[in-house]
Figure 1 (cartoon, rainbow, N blue to C red):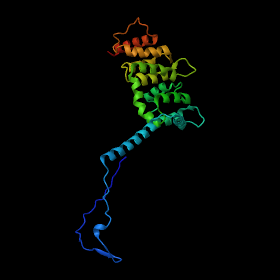
Figure 2: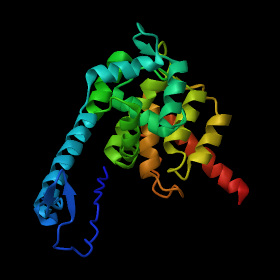
Figure 3: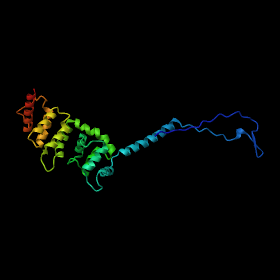
Figure 4: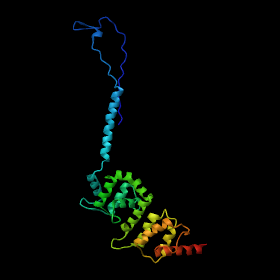
Amino acid sequence: MCVYVFTQSLGAAGPVNNTDHSIHNGTNTNYFEMPIRRKRSSPTSEDTRSKKARVGNWSRQRSEDDQAFSNKRCVAWFHEYTGPDDDTLGPEGMEKFCEDIGVEPENIVMLSLAWKLGAQTMGFFTKAEWLKGMTELQCDCQRKLQQKLDNLRSYLDDPVRFKNIYRFAFDFARDKDQRSMDIETAKAMLALLLGKHWSLFPSFNMYLEQSKYKVINKDQWCNILEFSRSIMSDLSNYDEDGAWPVLLDEFVEWLKESRTMSS
């Protein structure tokens, strides 16, 4: 808040005649006997500091009130994307939610958010999941969540958190009536999670496209991450007698043959 102080300067008085200046009702009136208008004193530095302190305290209190998490406000925010009596935020609401926070639905930060909320089904947030996760994040409005997006992205740079998010993604994305993930969904999720960080991903994706596999089970899913982290791109440290799933053994065999044919 800007405080403006306006002051009025007083002009200097002209020459004064000590003789009678005027006569009113027959009474002589002397100029120097008229009440003197005193100049308004300027605020002292102490007054200024006191005023600034009051303004500062008010501003800080208002800021703290804005930042305090409100369960009621969080629920109202949830219902901006659902009907008033709905307990589940669905695909249409999710699209608007993503638009409001400035994130594409397929952006990986949405997977971090889903993990934080403990969401069970891709494309849906229940009210219970929303309240649990948003309370942990201390977000009860769009602005607060936007301020946490960088923090959610940072989870992906932490090896332990990334592993948890990666494992979460399997159950999150698979059809709930299936124990495995269909191959098309698996390729899309692997591209999202490993596409930018695993140098062999383009080759692995090509292998999956021409392979006999129609689904990926959880053991295969988890081992793909470990393989991407531990096996060098030239396969020099790959152990044929290791305990890798057959899927990955066959990938290595296919890749070696492809490299031999192209050399």
